[in-house]
Image (cartoon, rainbow, N blue to C red):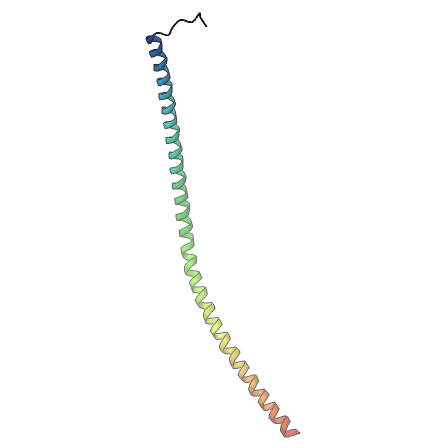
Length: 106
């Protein structure tokens, strides 16, 4: 390419300045985009935190109810176990009495 003339330092300087300015613009644009995304992420975390607080507020009374229900169920289990033992004991006593009556009758 013999028709090309050499690049002058002024032309080279202008090209480099334009390149630097383009890179600076891209970095500035990137910085703005990153900032906007971080703001959106912060907003999402704030919303999530608010939702979790509401869920916790709703679950707290249920935990108390659950504890009360568990205590009632434990008392019921004890009561039913005692009744079951009493009934088993009564059945065993009736069985012994029937066996004794059958022995007398034979």
